[in-house]
Amino acid sequence: MLSSSRHVMLPCYSHERPKNTQKAFAVVRYGGEEATLSVEDGCVWMYLPGPKPARYECWRAAAITFGEDEKRAEDERHAGLDDGIGWSCAGDVLFAGFWLDDQPELSEAVKRRYEALITLCRAKGFGHFYRMWNYLGAINADNAQGEERYRDFCCGRSQAFEAMGVSLTDLPAATGIGLSTGGVAVYALAHRETSGVNIENPRQLPAYRYPRRYGRRSPSFARGTVMAGAQQTVLYVSGTASIIGHETVGQTLAEQQAVMVENIQTLQKTATEHFPELDSVTCQSLKIYVRHGKDGSLIQRAMLKIFGGMAEQSPVFIADICRKELLVEVEAVFIGQ
Image (cartoon, rainbow, N blue to C red; front, top):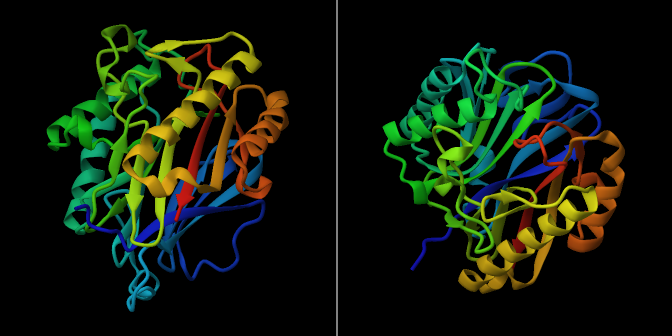
């Protein structure tokens, strides 16, 4: 029988800088010219470069198993900035992230920083990763050796997971998206007690099984991760695009949107086979990435119509996507009871 998580982290979005971060573990700002990482009053602040206006993503703990220590994740918060890694934790949940300055080649530096991230989280007692984000400047450009920077990044990430003994089936849900300027930003959610249940999509080859044509090392993530509690179950959907098997499908926005939506729906159906409570879900949030700004409002309206949710919890970001031919990518958080 799977053990129940007591808390997970969920995002809340706003156009303005949050004024009260007393209960926040982290705030990630998208938009602006500079990248910074700091820890203030127990909260990690990550500023990522990107088009304005800025959007703020605030991470707070949410109880999914209710009990007498339900407030534990709010009352015992600890935070710090160690070896360039900002972290904040309480109870059974932790947020941690780093910024890596740009490099002519990424893999070696990414490997070292990923290993440091995993080491820190384990040392703090949070060895179970259940969601990760990876943002790369010039993601589709070539590095100094003529290798695409995303593939260069994937090599270092894969080597780090292997060196740290993280098996392929333990890889969590993740997103890999471009930034407007160079450098690499990575942040992760980890749990003290419970491993998430990673879900693959039968329409897609697991990313970590991609053939060598996609780079020296395959991308390292699951299509989705489920965190189950006694009262609520959360499905974290990785960044999802128009890919069937391992091939990109569709040339137009409409074609890619249709395949992407079916991929998300298929992942939901597969997760429901393991967790029946996900048969009826609330869309807690969507995160929409479009290569061209003109497509943002169209995709947002379509996603809200299909999956529900609120517009303020479904921000649109203009960004390059991990394959040059992809026009749109969407990630999601669904909650079942």
